[in-house]
Structures are given as C-alpha cells and as structure tokens.
Image (cartoon, rainbow, N blue to C red; front, side):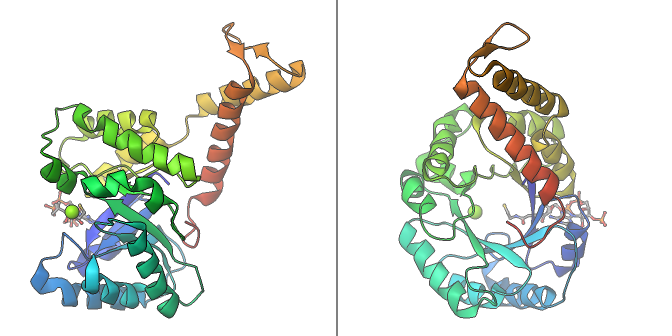
Length: 285
Ligand code: COA
Ligand code: MG
C-alpha cells in the first residue's frame, strides 16, 4: 500500500477519474467531504457505482460516517468489490465491533471486508492499541485536522508537534501485529515539494502509505513508498553475507551485522515481495 485517493461520495463524476489514477486504493468518502444535506444522495450514488462490476484497477475502500448514519452507510456499501471500510472518528474498539456486526449482516463473503479505523481525537489516540487489536482491522489511519482542533495544536511546517502522536499510532500497530498505519492527508495539495518532504518523514517514522486528496499527490506519495531497488539489493547482499558467515558478520562498510540487522533486512525483502505481488489486485487488502 502506497497511496489511497479520497473522492467525495457526492461527486460521482470523479469516481472513474480516481480509478484511472495510479492510486493503490480509491477511497470513496461519505463523511466530511459530503455536506449533511447530501448524505443520502451520496450513499445512493456510491452504492449504484459499486454495483457495476470492475475487473481491474485500484482497490476500493469507503469511508463511512460515525453513528446511525454510518450504520446505514455500512449496510449500503458492504458489497463485492469493496475491500475495506474506513470508520471515521473511531473512538473505541466497541465501535469496531458494532461495525463488524453490521458488515456481517450484509457482506457477500463472511469476514471479507476489512476495517480501517480513523483516529481523530485525543481519546482515540490514547485507545489506539485496543482499537488496533479489534477484529478485522487492516490498518489504522490518523486524522489530524480534527485532532489538532481538539488538542489545540497549530503545527509548525515540519509538524513536530504531531511526532509523538504519530509515533504512538505506529507503535500501537506494531504491538498488535497489524500493517503500519496510513499517513494523514495534506490539504495544501498545490505544494508537492512540501508533500514529498513530509511524506518522507512519515516513511522514516514507520508509516506505510498515505491518504491523498488530489490526483497530483498520488505520484509523489507512490514514489516515496515504493521500495528503493538499491535498498533491496543491499538487504539481499547483507542476508547472504550473514547466512554465509553463519552468524554475526560485517557489511561492506565495516558495520556489524547481527540478527537484529538481518531481521530488518528480511522484513524489507518481505515487504518488497508483497509490493511486487500486490499492485493491481482489488481483492486483497
Ligand atoms: N479524485 C479524482 N479526480 C479528482 C480529484 C479526486 N479526489 N480531485 C480532483 N480531481 C480531478 C478534477 O476533476 C480535475 O479533472 P479535469 O482535469 O478532468 O477537470 C483534475 O483532477 C484537476 O483538479 P483541480 O482542478 O486541480 O482540483 P479541483 O479544484 O477540481 O478539486 C478538491 C480540488 C480538493 C476540491 C478535490 O481535489 C477534492 O474534492 N478532493 C477530495 C476531497 C476529499 O475527499 N476529502 C475528504 C478526505 S480529507
Ligand atoms: Mg474529518
């Protein structure tokens, strides 16, 4: 997973455009990009579009509203072709259980639709580990706009005031063994250089993939999260050297290679193999 492109559910004329982008996931939104008066119309438009079958293209996710509107959303979008739903404003693991129960009632293939909770409040971030450990979780996503408003953060250009929060979401995901979290959107979609710099910082911090709001952001985010062939080659050489030595060895720059270093290299190789095999599939997660 490198990129997920949001599309407002109230703008069906953009759905096919989003599908022809290079995003790994097209994320149809029924929540904050859809005004209250348009919720029913957006849900109907998304459900109608989902009922058309598609053999290829990005995977399809849908972001649903919290509460009772969200339950109606889930019932309408629990169809073939949807690989995950994003639960906006998830506050607790209990909410994930409720969403799972609604999905179970409507989805065509039991357990087939995964859940990506979006953490957008102080209490959600503090409950990240319990939420991450709930059933069906694919990965977490961080929603920073609402969070910043609630906790009174006005981020610097490098977002340093959010580093601790971001790390907490990475740690919670790793601690329960789910995929690393999806990075937050960047709203100044005209500044692709700033997007690149901040996406590289997210990647170093342990995020994998980032949510986008504009097609122009997708290429930048894809590039940052694409495995670097030089890193892969280095990892492969390092594992080979370690295996040949039968234990601790030195790399070609004279640094120690022990089991921890090899484990990291093997993880990189496993991720890149997954990446090679996962590109165009719509059914995986
Ligand atoms: N998905 C698919 N196509 C999109 C798109 C999206 N999210 N955003 C823009 N486009 C298309 C436009 O329709 C336009 O197509 P055209 O060249 O055929 O006319 C092209 O990309 C360039 O768009 P541009 O004019 O630069 O942007 P805009 O002013 O039309 O739209 C936004 C800007 C932010 C309103 C729009 O990108 C958007 O709605 N993004 C998603 C917002 C969202 O879902 N938010 C919720 C999550 S935070
Ligand atoms: Mg929001």
